[in-house]
Image 1: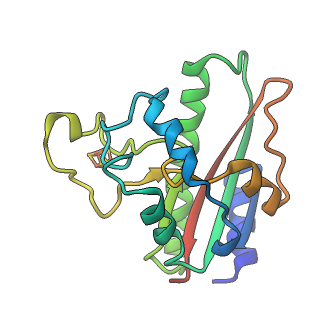
Image 2: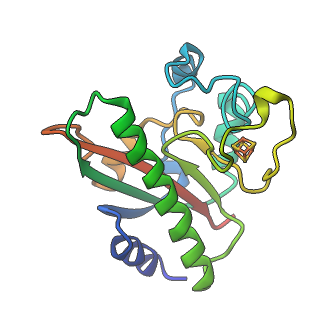
Length: 182
Ligand code: SF4
């Protein structure tokens, strides 16, 4: 599938911007793992897609480099209050849904199906993650991790893609990535 088609389809399906870059342009900072450990999102050690279960920063980087290309997707939305976690959280979930829908659509149109999705937030395929109950993950082949779990520098990513990631004027911005071409 042509990369131009992937980008165009993303724009036609609700994304504000889309770009395809080489995975060697995805800059990671292992020290960012500390932000996960601080657990401001509340998912540390509570979700199979999150640290520490998902893997070390080095293992996560290795996962990225198993693929050659990355479709980077961005949504930008106006909110009433960008410090309202509930409001931005809802948008993050919508971004995830849009990404999953787009991946499905592109697969139906012939995109190779063995890629890897990196999302704006922690895995939410289940109503609540089975990890705290000690139950196995029912969707091991589909569950995902977020950019933070991969220690991806979002600012650097936006720059590599020519995207504006500023949170200004109550506009919030989220990213997701689909890795392909293994
Ligand atoms: S698929 Fe369900 S159990 Fe598995 S990581 Fe995602 S939310 Fe957790």
